[in-house]
Length: 274
Image 1: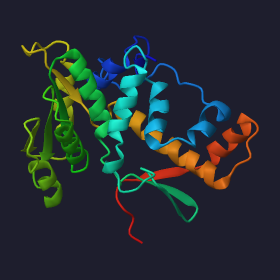
Image 2 (image 1 turned 180 degrees about the horizontal axis):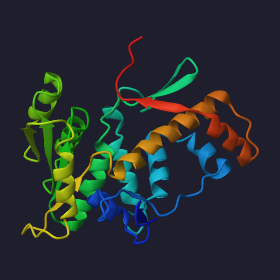
Image 3 (image 1 turned 120 degrees about the vertical axis):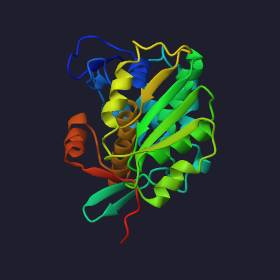
């Protein structure tokens, strides 16, 4: 699997390059050069019987070449990212019915572990330091900070920026009370989006700047391809859960396809108070 820019769409990049660059060199986003085919018989029905770590492994394998991460290491990354003791629900991402909608609850686990584990793996493979640059209004930052702190790879550090006075005290404490040499946090004056451009410009200069120690700067806000790839697993898991509950009688892929297209699964990162 290779990745291309949403603007140019010609030059191809590896998964590692897309993950570390964040933005494509032309300033646009990375997307897969082609989308893999899914069938009910070969993929979706068998996936409905997998644990969440195994499902993640199966999905990511379609988007990450074995030449970049072999099966053994990818399985290890998925298992570490979704270790059972980190979750307060045995299904990892439970799906609840609310009226006619199905809600995937994402607040039962540390959500940033998978992306950080992938970055940590590649940083170790390169044996060169990587610094993650993050701008947060309270959600992405704390999750990323705790993931980097727990991974504790000296080659992977994070610098988080938040707008002073514009996040809650609880969120600020989540950021500033982490005791880790891998974590740096700074506040800035301005709006929540004011750091987006400086970070983007820093990332686009990656290939032009010699830091002396070979350091790479990596952005992991929502534009990074690692984020939607991991989030995609939530929706596939939610849809396969629905299949199990409804006990669809599927004999042809077009039947699955019609039901798949009519199904709406949304996700929430905080509990819904009823």
